[in-house]
Length: 136
Image (cartoon, rainbow, N blue to C red):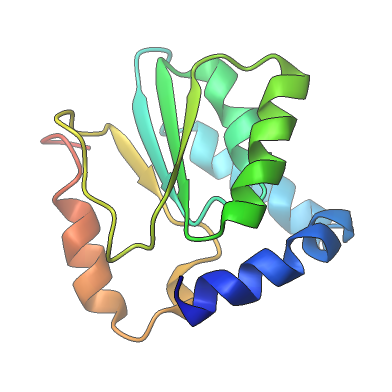
């Protein structure tokens, strides 16, 4: 396990209990993101954390794959999805660098609150672009 995953695993319970620092900003981010999602969308979220955004967006799309490096965060995310009755949401543990896109390409890829944590943002953005369908 890498040190980043260990950090987030340890922080997961406290992170999940913390209120959103800027609720209005978060709601605005959700509103903007929803404009790119359609009922037939295949969506990938990298750095999903505790899954709050995934649980909110997944009911409005065809399929949602949420990825995070932390097993602790993903445990919380799976519980949220189960409690919300969201069935089209899958989770995978991987870092942005480790993640290998499945056979499908995605209509949208979200990396909310993630890019500022990365050393080489341009390389990651280029890699993420490869996960998108043409026009995604």
